Length: 454
Image 1: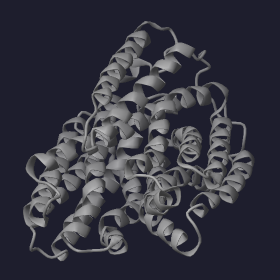
Image 2 (image 1 turned 180 degrees about the vertical axis):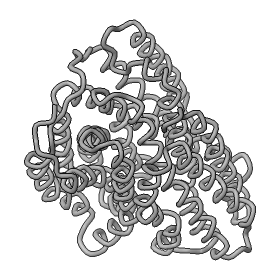
Image 3 (image 1 turned 120 degrees about the horizontal axis):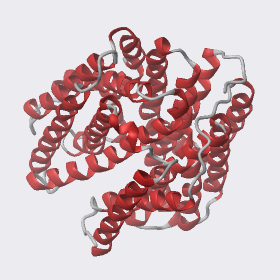
């Protein structure tokens, strides 16, 4: 039930703010990593856990947090998420060693795990169907803005102040967001199913283990323990799914997947972000290793790609409302795949950066179109009481897609290239871009399955 007068502007602003904060904090830390490493006198291998702990926690806790939101209130859990995230930010800023920082990042991740799906659910539930595409487009564009300004802002803060300030800036924003969200956002609930503790443990263990193993597979030395954890996590995940089939009130209702739009939308989302995160991993490296850019120049050269997320996404959202999710999602996936394919075909060790600009714009426009279309397709295929769970499942597919895409792209890179020379790096990079294009084109097979009316 909604118990507050709806103000679309405030709803869009406050839900986008939570998404922006969670996205920003995954990006802003990347440019502070060297300063943290030097301050704590730690290795790169140890440092990566200050980065991985946040993302792994988000994936692991997400569905449990969503289940709580559906039961006791989406706005309430959204605000608790922002509060937990803010407390975690304070602890990060106060960290005096890497272990403390990792624990603080886990606390941040617990808060961030519900900020994105609950903001999606609140936004979608509060607005009529005819306005959702536009709103989700703007929401996605603001999240895209975090990708653009995050690394640059982090670098500026570290250069002018200290790395701790990348966390301190979250505190006043978080306090203001909680106050305004409590005042301005409508409360809503989904189903009131009892939350099964065993299911909660199983899904946390399964998702944390799978994301951890995929992250570790990118390391130069693959430990047997990583493989064991991955296999055990998959078995735990299968056990979780089998339990969902038998339960009257499952955490993940498998009947949602009877909808071809819901299933196709989630698989297409998985492939969309598998492609994107593979490119995110290698494109900045290519610009620095082969093109000779420094970190700031590389960030600026990526703008034709990331900038479209902020510019094109709101217009793409309007197009979704007007022409339907099937057409815009499919067109977006085609454009994303085409952009990456063009980079693979045209780029070589001697080519100038200019040849990448138009393909990057094409790929970015495709991502900006497909993102809101797939969101609306997935959320539009369930009833309002199921929006929280649907948004949680969507975000799990998004996170898993990113992890799997990065891992496969890294494997492909080292199969056809290496980091020992610019020529070898170019060879691996082109193979990685082809891999990203294939992911995008595979997504078309699933977006085309959307039912008429979507």
